[in-house]
Length: 130
Image (cartoon, rainbow, N blue to C red):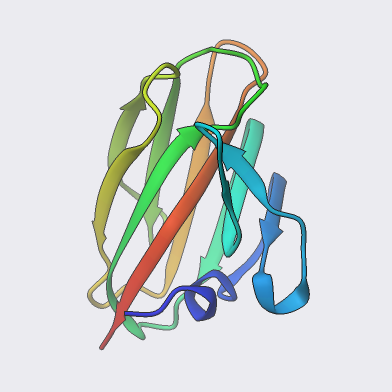
């Protein structure tokens, strides 16, 4: 399992930030805990990953970033431009864990949708290579 190398495959998006401990980037806080090697999406944004078929699966925790609007959100996962899954995220729950099967996938998009301006963090990211 690896963490920061998978996050390095995040190459673009809209309304997002990426934090890598190797770059001494900023961290984010969820439920009073601080996380590095993570990313956040806000304001109906999205992130794009160039996986090049190198990963078989990824696991991550999703949670509302501390001091942001307490508003539920929906996370949509697109694999090679097809909707693969949708997850309702409760703003009052600290972390929600998701698994994504990436076998044979070249590109992944993770999109955030909400009724208000929200900030959600994606932490404890671990991936298995093929």
